[in-house]
Image 1 (cartoon, rainbow, N blue to C red):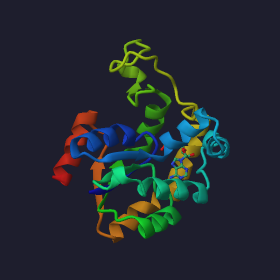
Image 2: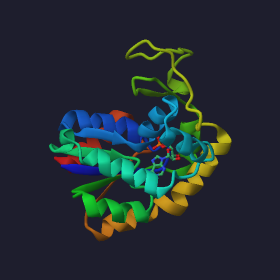
Image 3: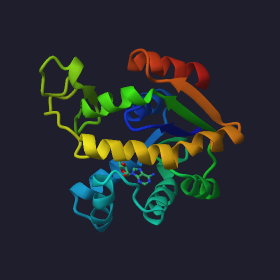
Length: 206
Ligand code: AMP
């Protein structure tokens, strides 16, 4: 099974992606994580990506599509994968359809007002876990691995607004794109715990 996970920044894509990939044995591919690893490693891709990410804009399509195309050519994805953060515009979706067979698109729908609060309060760990400050009770370390939590550089109020605008303008049209292909499944990500959202997804995936 090959899945595209769609949702605005702060909708909980990363959290649900790791749950889904674990339960269904899918390889989790996050373009945001790939870019952050490249920025950390000081690679040429990282150098290109950084200015776009800091501005809340999309990294150019040529760069992003090439990364995903190469990643999907690797052997480990043969048993199925979950794309988290790709595609992010109609051009990328069209390119993806040339080199991949997507079975289903899960759209995590969350109210705009909630998104801003979620992203600005988000704290993450290098292990991939994500928290909201309201549930941390002052703790500054990861409950899963004990490492220090930090705020993603692009999770600041200015960049967040730009990311939400980019989502509305460029990514939201993908909802119609996948609906037209009869591949769209929408779940409500604004109410309930991450496990409750996950239960909605499992009910649809079977
Ligand atoms: P994310 O971790 O998915 O929120 O992505 C963080 C940032 O990486 C985004 O705000 C974009 O600047 C960049 N990015 C991630 N995925 C893509 C993509 N498919 N196309 C272009 N830029 C992307």
